[in-house]
Image 1 (cartoon, rainbow, N blue to C red):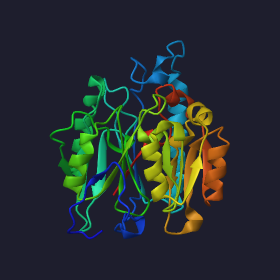
Image 2: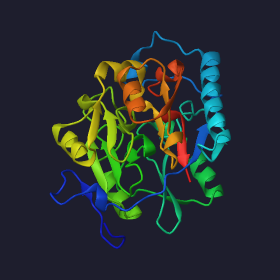
Image 3: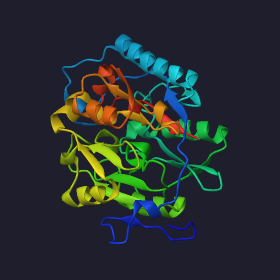
Length: 310
């Protein structure tokens, strides 16, 4: 795919589509986290938050967040990530700690850094977005706004193909399908649109984890038959994770960090998975298993609690 092409959103793939024809892309190697001081469960935004009899243990949540932070600090010391960055949580923004949702950062081929600002479905989360816009402005990103779509939840629903200028966009629950028509135009990159049909998987980052350029692990029950057909066209190896494991352990909200040195390929995942852990190990990843149970009560785990930035 040449840089002067007009890219498009795909709902089915043409016969001549090939991952090999997609332009190469440099992976971001900096990690952004949001401090958890105001993290809380105050209303129901997804199926996991309906379990109102389960109360948040705030001290335990902070301990779990600190454990994840320590993992990233160790990864920085070992040159697996370049830098660990922080943004302060804001009072009244109880879900801001899930900092994968408010934006979608991107780097153009000429090095220009862009960030597409989210249009959050829930009113209480809409207040989070300006804090991130200010943060990205200070780091020389150009903020972009979607004009037509009414819902778009950033990296929660948009996941790049490893090493390629190709995006997968989940829609149907937290993001509009029309968001990807805009996204492909403003970023000049193709988007494969995947409808999410299972309430257990309300974001793409809860059910879809690219492991390498050729392998992905996912929960088949999250997607339509048409979506699965496109995914199988894009990946030679598809690891199917049982729905029960994906729901119970949030294993498909893992953070996978491919590295230019394959010996440094690293993944961070919620403790307790079987099939996802086996897939990661088979693909050559060194795996950190951590506990994120307090954040799972809000419907998120490792991937939700960070943002990869340039």
